Length: 248
Ligand code: F6R
Image 1 (tube, rainbow, N blue to C red):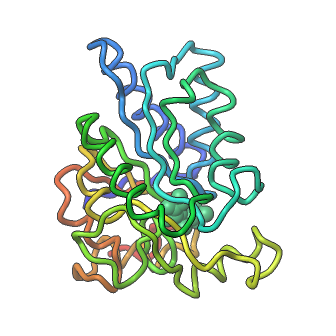
Image 2: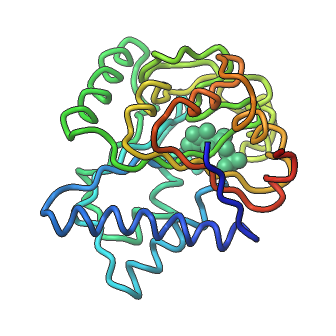
């Protein structure tokens, strides 16, 4: 996997935002929708900040953007400030001109028996738009992308999953304590992510250095779902110096 190392997450995030903006503009010039796959968590925050700046200062429009978020906790109320729905509106959607009907985020409010059908529809919607043009990813210390935890199949699609104990531990600070973190989530699958035309995986800081090494240099295995990206034809890993420290 090609790796781009930047001196800081700020510089790296600006570079990623520029790549997203150029997909949006290219599609705009063709009168087409740009289909973006989006992530939450700490990693993309500065990318979204830069996109908002580009919208406010450089006139970048999101009128031709359709977005699909990777995941949402389950169960989770949209109005809860830990929801990914809330996160995306707070960091991006409330500040740009994306049409609300073009925003897709897995619904954490569904009843359990509605989930299967919902997930199939989510997947179908992506396919009908011709697939995701650019997929942004963060990575968990378990090697998850989206919430595809260790053990996730290469063929997996959008579905309800159980979170890994390490992921729950890492989310504890957002929820106050570990017991308050939902144990499940709805996530796009490895296959759903893999179908994207281009994938950018971001990681910042020393805590991510071991998993970045395993993702880039390790053998491809369900034990580290992010290693499946080694098979993708247009993927790049964007890291700051600290996250690159263990690379050969
Ligand atoms: C979030 C997601 C997760 C995160 C990962 C890293 O939508 O899909 O895979 O990207 O847990 O989280 P941060 O960026 O907070 O370290």
